[in-house]
Length: 328
Image 1 (cartoon, rainbow, N blue to C red):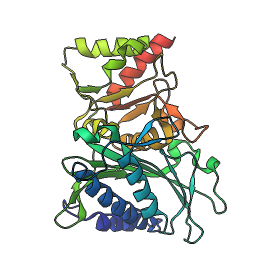
Image 2: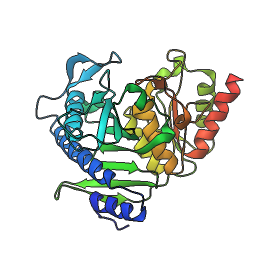
Image 3: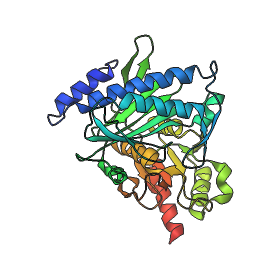
């Protein structure tokens, strides 16, 4: 792997190293890259054109939809529906699955995506991102049930971070690789080959504004971190992709646990927790809901929520020990 290699060339090289590969991912990622470039451009123009603020609509979760959410959602659907490799898609922003229009060819993959994680922070110039997951499907008419698969059945997952630079980080089950968009040539270039998360970090990311709702295991664990002689540092952006990306590169743990107000957690299993869990495990980390591995949870509904504890392997294992001790 050479730094500066284009994403397309890298995918082709990966395809040659794995004889069973069909080349479908090269085409799927080509469409994702197109969507990422459009969204990146609009995010960078957000203060100059009228795409900041709420759209006046609410999504299936009852949350206020931002204008950029709608723009990102439509951009991804338009970019992905014509490629011939997908049968259907599911978006965090939409109630039901999106079938590929009959006027386009259909393939044997499904795409799930959170079009713009952290979008409520865009008007204060905080980094935001797109999260995606790819599943296989059988020939024939796709139903919601085809999307309800545990994370271990993902064939690829990744995210695009729109920050000081635009980055795509992804896995197909053969390690984790990061590419940075070079706007001067319009290409994503390899910048972070074979990402490995440190076994143990010194950063913890949790919204302490929710501390009054925390369950005993959460409070005990956070207090342990604060009193630890190893000097853990609290870093919480409030944009999941941003917090996850920093901890992936530097080591640490992100926590959005179950609490007294949200016993089932707040984050979405299929659109957020599963894809990031696939990535972190491929990088040598760990992901849990506090008592079980995220990737083994069998979803019961399209927009299922889950607690999420994710990051460096030793840190997540330690956090799990606190949860389990206080449940017993």
